[in-house]
Length: 306
Image (cartoon, rainbow, N blue to C red; front, side, top):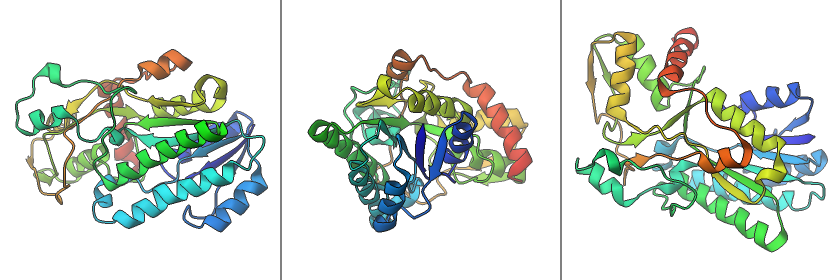
């Protein structure tokens, strides 16, 4: 197929593009910035793709609290422009959008966790029937994109699939995100490190598993069109416990200074999701456990991020 990819040089895109080319697809990557609407339209119309893989976005959730307008202009307005341009592509089979589990935002269980009153039964996995309640500029923009895609699908029959991705790890060139940040800080600092909130629960997926999910979605448009999917897996862990797991694997015996990062207004205390719907539709399911994935991430950080 002829596939058009935005965000090709990002974490996920840098894995997807070579995979698609190896499979024999003709891949065109967006060169313009997403907010450069005129040039985005020109590149897309020239490519005339069968599939659009839309990954381009600002993804640093923490920064979105302080750069609200920028995140909205790029992540929402840029996506609306791309959708409207894509509606003019007569041969389009699917528009695959990188959404986020962050759209679930605040849920009633968050208050229990914030107050330290949660029980194991409270740590539920969100699914596609869980009402979204985004609570960060980043996630508000992403949810807005989902709603725009649904509108275009209902009104014009526009083909789309949205993947609500969870925290992915296994980066070679970025230690901003939580897994790589914990690992690299511990490797570099034997005595103490500084981290943010320790009480929230998050679930995690290793990069290889996430790329395989994208693979089956891109290559099977008829199985997934018009649907929103959570990626999962259901493996929520408290960040403090996650840091402890990593410390044990590294034999790191220093001190963690918690709550040393900038405050995130309205911090979300539980993000966890099920991949059951996507597995039922495509047969895909993640293969790496959190333990085995973290072992791989540690080796990647040692080779590339020190």
